[in-house]
Image (cartoon, rainbow, N blue to C red; front, side, top):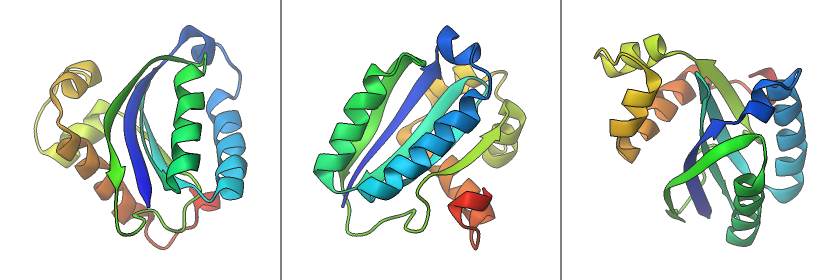
Amino acid sequence: MYYIFYQAVESAVFKNLENGIENLLNYSRENNKKLNITGLLLFIEGTFIQYIEGEEFEVRKLYESIKEDKRLAIVKTIDEGTTDKRIFENWDMAYDEFTIETVNKIEKIKYPNIQKYLATASAIKLIKLMVQRKKIFEGLDSQSI
């Protein structure tokens, strides 16, 4: 199983789209199901943090298309590699949106804004956010998230 963990910043194009996140999720879920890719997408005040997993060829191909997407201004790889099993086995694309206040609650610390947090957050901290969100989602399928 191959995974890529990345963060991206929304572009002006994305900000101006009506129903941008809903359209993105609908397309991603349908596409990911076809490609047998699972994962979690977090949206925090204009920044996406995403973990995608599946067969290496498909994950890399998807990530290349993500890096070319005009809805994103910046795409930065946090980590990638292989793993024995999927983390988000039943979710073609789980999604959650939250604010810096939620990050501060999970981290039990006060970051003034998301940019400062992301500039200093290690991959481990970002994975911790995802795991905390995953615990909330347990028992739900991706269509109800």
